[in-house]
Length: 423
Length: 113
Figure (cartoon, rainbow over the protein chains, first blue to last red):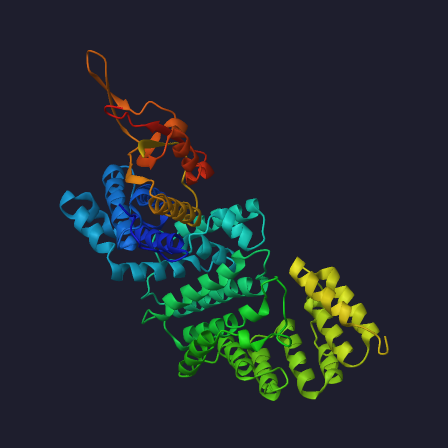
């Protein structure tokens, strides 16, 4: 007797958890989110007990859903006098004639796709700050426990728990999942874009060998952006541009971070390690994202990433185009980090002295006070200008601001590169 | 080869979806390994945590189980091994120890043995 050979995706339980919680929340009402989470936890425990012995079934998704459905029907039957469930389903839940068929219908594949999206929109409630929206998405839709969310954001457990508990209260106050036909759909979609963008960046910039979990954030952001793309209402040019941006950046991850956990800047990356499949998919999405009238920061950031993807080396990059794109980005979303990146491109185009001038001209430079890559960029440009001593001082300042062992090692390497000519 | 019964006792497998998936995959790998090594007579079954207990001459029926969670039998497997020592050694590979549970190994009484 052999256990079944069926295997599931690496994060199958996480993703199923998000889908089923969303679907059950639609039936129970958002105010009963905790109950939906309990039912899912229960269904997972049963799956675990049975699959331990029998192996993973042929259709594990359907198995989990059926188990959750049966538990949901039990709960609805047991608690219908004590609780109010989704108001629009009241009548159907009260009657034994309709209860099971209605729950079956609501947990069908098409409805669930909508529920997952509606939950994503619900998590981006305007009363929630962006970090709370992102944490809530990770917790509910990606099945991250409080501890896992805290680890992913390098935040404390207590603070994370407080943030998520508060966010859930706001969510519960809305009583109903967000309607995809609502008048404020466009505004909410834009909040969803922003949350997924932040989720991706948190993983991308924080990815390190010490916290492998952070690459999971990129994967989750990419997955949820895919859920958006596959839905006719949400698949706007901006959604496509966001997907392009994620793919084109994710393609560089293998070269950005080597097996030893060392960070490599765009200038030193081994470009043969870039993931060509992701680049192709990113380019495809970027092409079809150029159909609308709206030009967003996602379009521009994706376009910049595409210029890099086209270049065989840093020297062979179309820097004037990169500078032009940063100009557009600054006009749409001005920020000192964007201005700093623009200055780096200018330095590539017109030499390090011009780059340094551009940096000195950034008007809100003080906001970069704790950003290690601000002094690191100065160091890089001073080094290229033939001032190793000045460069060294800059890198040392950057080192003092480093946020991870990986950043520290990267900056130590740069310090070591600052040798006086003739030494 | 002789036959043995593994009784899986206790072990808390609840957790985050990710943790549960990891636990599940370890069990699937463990069962497969038992099979590959020729130790698996029957994968056995998980048991519901609730049940009834019937006792005494009065045949009184009470709600079971009476055991504490850590002693509760959650499932069983039929094993083939050379002897009890080998069966006990093999049991050490069970993932249940990572979740605080244990394995009880009982030789099946051999008829005519």
